[in-house]
Amino acid sequence: MNLRVLLSISALAVAVAVTAAGPPTIQADDLTITPAWAHATPEGETAGAVYFTIQNGGRQLETLLRASSPVADEVIFHRTNDQDGVAHMEQLWTIDVVAGRTVKFAPGARHVMLNQLRQPLVAGKTIPVTLQFQHAGAITLQVQVVPASATGPTESGG
Ligand SMILES: [Cu+2]
Image (cartoon, rainbow, N blue to C red; front, side, top):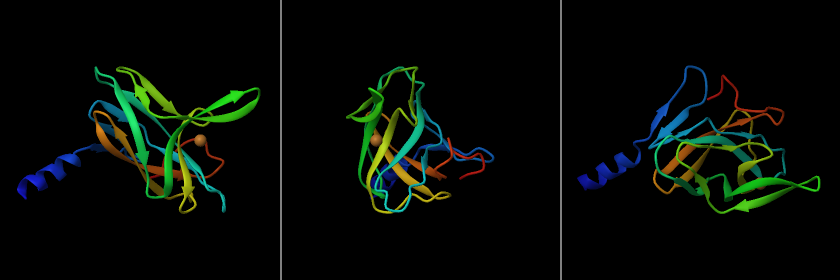
């Protein structure tokens, strides 16, 4: 029983650095993940997208294996491609973060797709999204929902 308690504590041993006035940057294992954000969704919209940046400060390849969230039935990785002037979303099964490199999830590029939303994404709220990495394990992001017109997380959010 004691061992079990110790194991659950170590599973939670992910350092979260909260800046004075903003959502947290997460550091876990060799990874640094910038504050995640998502656009608010209009009533009736069934999908949303989550953006952030992962930096691998370590010496080994890290791989993002999958993601999940209690707010969506399906959470997958997408990349938006421009094909003959038409935006097209391609599914990515896993995402490699090479040692020393940074991978960006941003509008018009890679994103975490929340499909079959169970509730609309409301500006000013945060939603949990858990990323499962090959080495770093599970890391839960508190995703800041911003107005549809915003281009990133707000400075005073949280
Ligand atoms: Cu998508």
